[in-house]
Image 1: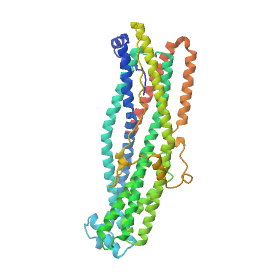
Image 2: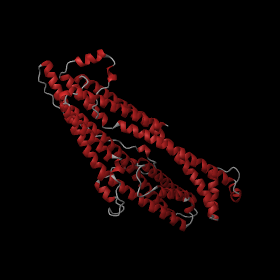
Image 3: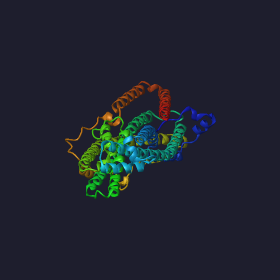
Image 4: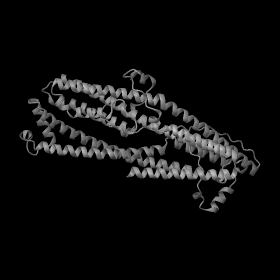
Amino acid sequence: MGCSQSSDAQWASPTLKENMQNAPVDAQTIEDYLELEKEIAEAETSSPGLVLQQIKDQRAHLKMRTEQQKIIYQTLQQQTDILRKNEKLKDIIGEGAQDDEMKQKILELIDENPSEEARDAFATLNSKEIALQELESLKDQNDNLDRELEVAEKQAQSLQELYQRQDALISRIFGGAYGSENENELEHQLDQHEEMRNRIVEANFKWKQAQLMIDYAYKQLKEAVKQWMLLPAINSQNLEEKYGVACIARNNLVAASQNIQGAQGYLNTVQFPYCSPPEVATLNKATAYIFTDMQTPDRHEHALECYTITSKRCGALLQWINQVVHNTIAADLEDINKKVKDTSMALRQERVRLLQVKAKEITGEELDIKVQDINTDVKVELNLNALALTEGIDPSLLATLTAKDLERLKIISDDDLAPPPSQEDIFGKVDALKNQYAEDNEKLMHQLQENQARVKDSLEEKLRNRRQRRARKHLEEKERDALIAN
């Protein structure tokens, strides 16, 4: 909860500034201040600034994936055109045949003569269909993000307006300077804790979003294996039923692959110990041949082994991510939330004390104002729209794992599980951030000790420095947004 001071630009009208500064400090002033703190805390609970930035990042990631997918689809379209001209297949396919007709005729050919050329042709057509499905899925995700962006921008703007009201009120109360050295120090500590919390909340969101997507992918892979194991019991003459079951398996495999890649996109600085990009590429290649692999027992068994291994490794990846979320991030988030809450409470108490002193100076009255506790914890909702969905799996039931769930979901023993990522992999360069905080705090204390005789000048200088810091931060955010937009 940013308790920043106002900028000089807010005082464009000297008369307004003078009127506000000359307004009496009374019980209503204190009530207004405390009510504003509650509004800010409530607005910050959903961390609209972080959500807005995540949506922008995700849109940029989706844009890149969409462009890549368009190239893949265009390449497969070219390969399909080449198939139409293949001398060995032309007579079977016929002139002007549509993709579905080509697939049907090639599938019949495979039944009669399972040549490698026919399998490759059918895999090309299947890959093209998969690529088109993914393009449509990416478009749906982008449309959802556009709607979410509009909501997030409004929420972020509302929070900024609350900050501006807070700046104006505090400046009115204390005349643009700090009310006391203690207020200055507490505000500085709160800035530090909030900055650290922003980093931890961002990591928490990314890892829990990845957890959600891997959880969903794991369930999709298990469903694909289940459907694939049904195929041998289906009469070989009943091609329509076999094709339908294989389609369910294929759709789950395709969506699982997309969700694994989506999770990797959220954790793009982390190397997955399971289901790495080469493994996903192998899965995608196997999926392309799914309708020919169902034709013979040997190929069916080989495909089953690929799907089963990938499913188990996806489960191990989920177990690995669960450990990071529950054993590392959750504890750090709880700790930093407590620090923000305690420091925020102390800052409110100090400001109320200062207000009571000012009110007594003006009115001679002793104001008895109790500072109530405020929930300042930040919780960010996960983005279900980022999931590649399949029928029969409810996304709202995912990623709500208890300790018992985690124990039950273990695919391998903790001793055999890949080692956890480093703190830097999880949170970014937090150690450097902590060191900077320590240096800043030490400098602040040194300055306060050296300038006891010139408290007012010193505090106003720090106020100017803080404004400059905010201005630099705002500029960095604008530059980042510009880079994403390009």
